Length: 98
Image (tube, rainbow, N blue to C red; front, side, top):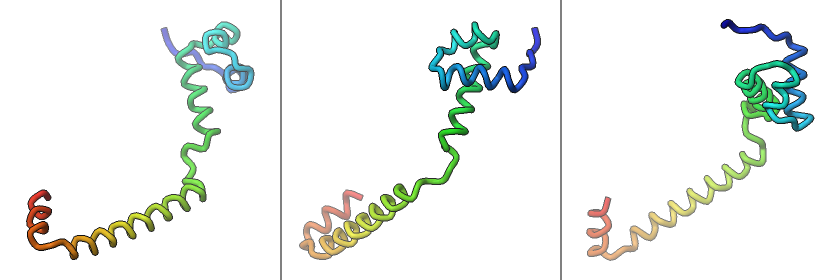
């Protein structure tokens, strides 16, 4: 049994049934005569294209990343200062744990 070619209009209708009409995959398959595996794949691809998964991160995310990087740099600098202030007998203990 070979693959059946489905025209783009039938494909779009099947996707629309699932995405816009909230029809289940099996129901949409019965209505359109398309196989469930193909329909699941089409819907998944449609959702990926329309969800913007491949788009770069949003400006809000970039701002959050930059603020977290600044906080990390501050904490690392504070850590270095505290390490310098350790008594010599504690420095030996901390150097062994690494």
